[in-house]
Image (cartoon, rainbow, N blue to C red; front, side):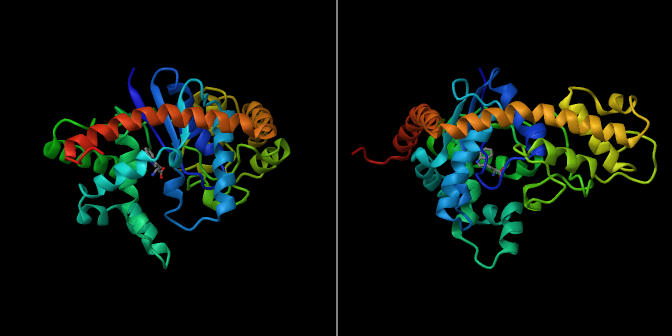
Length: 326
Ligand code: TRP
């Protein structure tokens, strides 16, 4: 079985765009691939985090992922900081990566332009990400196009390491996941649904109450033309609703469009489809909330399984680099 790895940051909650865009693929992939999913809390602290907030966000994200269908009995779901090899490998890879190539990373350039304090961790963030991937001999990394540069860097680092020390690391492929739905903001349908919009009315959270979901979708921006047609450029608002309804009911948005000639019924059906899609997620989440020990146990087992692979890779790396065994 091919091994894939994809990490997710414990920052903010998961929204409908995450579910229909990426998370759903992870849930499907866990049955056809050996899937590793670290919750990357070490990446989160590249910017200041409130300690209690980080603890809660990490546990909560694990619960959301499990509620959405990631099964810790099937995939390896774990917390990055529970496996100390991530930082160990990151250090030696930092000595393999070039200052110049890290300086060129778009995400670093964007993020360092925002804040006044730029941590060194923000600069080396992509190397920690490379360590996440290379520790597990991942064959492929199914992440969106925004991560392309980080995966290219991971490949470059692995190749350079291997050229220097022998065939030690597996060079992973970037796998653009099968087109998940592109879910846009309900109020600003020309930009992607995002976490950063706070509790803005344009974002549907996975754990929203059914009535909040209905309200947000009914108030979604459409346009003044009343014909229902799937056309992202001319009709971004309506097309987004078609996309969401299509994704929730496993249909192509173009064919969904044929069923409607008015916005009202489309919005209603879209809202009900999303409510139905998310109902089992909410239910399972509530169960997991009621018994946090179950999630803790699952994460401990995940860290143990991940740790075995990670320890073997680190042993290979240390031997290859010439560190004297203790
Ligand atoms: N940088 C990724 C993001 O912002 C998160 C991430 C960390 C990741 N480690 C990873 C993704 C390893 C894929 C593989 O989304």
